Structure formats: structure tokens, C-alpha cells
Length: 404
Image 1: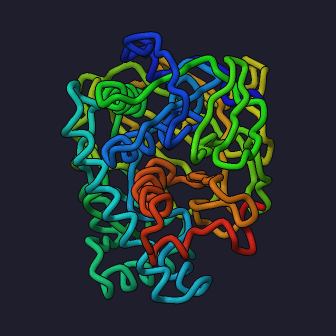
Image 2: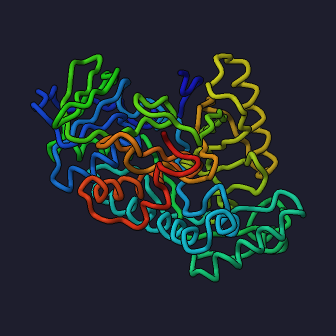
Image 3: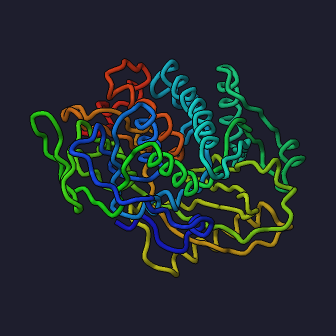
């Protein structure tokens, strides 16, 4: 599957990651993790901290899959607004899910501070503007719902939008305690800590099949056989080796990164910016003062091979950026297309397979994938150890749109 095509931005900011040593595999691991991107690295980190022996397998070079195409916007708000999620799953679970996302933001911050090198994790506000006048009422309702449940936010009318930004929109919802990150640096740093803590990293190792033995799992790969008590699939948007997603759509999106700009002081507090329209446009600044812009989602699973098509979509994103910041001169530095997954019920998949004991999943589908990776990795430690976790019921696999 073509996870991404085109020229990527984040690999320009950091050298490729390779394990510090070639590991001699253990006779058996407590946990084998399939996938070494954002979900896999955080899951390995959490299990390593819990004292488990861990092996992380990835069929590519670590961080070269969806992580390299991740645009690095981290928010507690979700693609589905809180008031909409309340209608879908009820107020207690919906509010708790939003709380979990806000808590995960702080956990990501804590992990970032532990890394030996900066992953450019910086707390930022987010500005979600009303794309059209008809969306103002929806933003107002979301503001009132978030505020009623104690989430940090603010409502802007059109006058306030115009006072803070170089473009005009009918209204905006501002949320606080969000963040930006260089996702590739972050994953590399986390994997480095996993290896330092005794975890074993195996790149270029593709899982071919898993067999259940009397007291362990036999994980057959392109790099020989691994034995483990438990296995966790953190395969992102790739097809999982075991089990079947029945509540997910794999689509594709486009993104660009510009060359650095000298002065972008008109960008209010360097906030993350997105909109109410679906599919939505989103943009952020980087530490290097480049602008990352994404959007133009299409209902097709694989990134296109056509360089011309990717360039055309990139130009459309650049034009949209110019519309928002007309005084600036932007030039494209990187332009690519990438696959991404969305769950039908707008929730990630976290937990044990309903019919296959010792097979666990963390699939953080949706615009909040990194946040889902954080909250899911903490949850899995409890689930594997048999510790009751009420939150796990919200994102369990055994639901209408889950993993079978």
C-alpha cells in the first residue's frame, strides 16, 4: 500500500533513525509490538516503563511510514464536536472521552520533556473558524458545551476574528492547551528511550502470520520467528496482520510545507488553525518558521502515484494559504499525499480482540491520531495486566464499528 507519495517535510529536519545495536532476540518477550510509528513507539515506551520485555517490529525503517506524513497538530478537540459526540454515545462517555484527550495532551508534554533532544513540542492554542455563516450556531453550541464541562476555550465573533487575524470569518472557537510537534523527531526520541530502557527494535521486519500456542504466541516474520505472551498491533493505516477492521475508512489527503518565512507576527500566537467545513483545511507553523498546510481529502485509500496530481493539489493548498495571509509570500518546499484512516463512529480502536485472547490493538484513526496513541498506550498497560479500566469501554474493539 502506498502510505505516502511526493516530497516529505519532516525527514528534512532530522537524520534517519536506526537502532543503536543489532539485538539478539530473547527466547520470549512479554510484548511484541507490530508497527514502530507514533502508536508503536508510545506503546513500547509505556510497557518498558511498566517493566515488560518489549520487541518493536516494523516492516520499514522506523518512522518512515505515516509518522513522516503526520502534520503534527495536537488537539484535545476532535473531528466530531463534543456536543455531536454527546448525541452519539451519551453525555458521560462523550465528556469523559474529551477529558481523556485533554489528559493525553499533558502526557505527551511529559514524554517530550524526557527526551534527550527537542521534538519541537510547544503548547499552542487552536482556532477553529466558521467556514460559512451557517456554521456559527454550531460553533456557539460547541463553545457552550465545552465551557459547561470545564474545557479551556473562548468564543470569537467576527470583529474579534478580524482583530486577531489577517482574514475575516463569521466566528471562531479558540481552544487552549493544544500543541504542535515535529512527529518524526518525537517518535525517534521515544524509540531511543525505549532502546535505552532495554527494549529491542527490529526494523525491516514484516509480520507474516501469528499462531497461538499453548502458552505463547508464535509471531512469524520476514526476519524469523518471535515468541511473546502478548502482541499489540499498532499498524496505523496498513492492513492489520490479524483481525479485520469493520468500522474504518481509509482515505487520502494532501499537505505542503513552505520555505521558512522571515516575519509571521500577524499569525495570532502561532496558533493551530482549522475550520468547520468538511473536509477541512488546516495549517500550522513550525519551529523553522515554515507553514504546514493540509486538506483536500479524497475518498480513495492509497496516495496517488502521479507527481502532477500531487503538485496540482499542493498549488491549491498554497492558494488557500495566500487567501488567509495575503501579505505574505510563500513558496512550496515539500508537497505530498498520504493515506489516513477515519473510524465510522469517530473513536479510536483500543483493546483486546473480542475473539482472540492476547491480541491487542491500538489504531488511532481520525484527525487526533497522536493524542489517541498516547491515551491508548497508557490504557493497554492496564488491560494487559488485568487492571480494570473504565475508560477502555468507550474505545473497545467489541462495538458496532470495531475490529472483528
